[in-house]
Length: 93
Image (cartoon, rainbow, N blue to C red; front, side):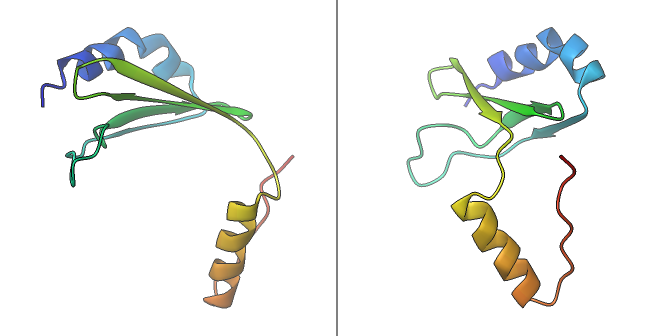
């Protein structure tokens, strides 16, 4: 798969990359006939997270998330970590 659009996206997002509270870049291959590549760019602030990945056709896909608390998935993960003997601290408001 040609990741040129995703590489160009990272360059285009340089100002956001510089200012983001947290950021990440991950590369991965499409497996098992998956629709989207596992490669992505992730940027976040205190309240929002945006991930950009790429379809096999080379189009960029933007996923947006806002901060949530006490979700079903979050509660399950929190419980599993505690049950595994790990200490968990709540994120600040």
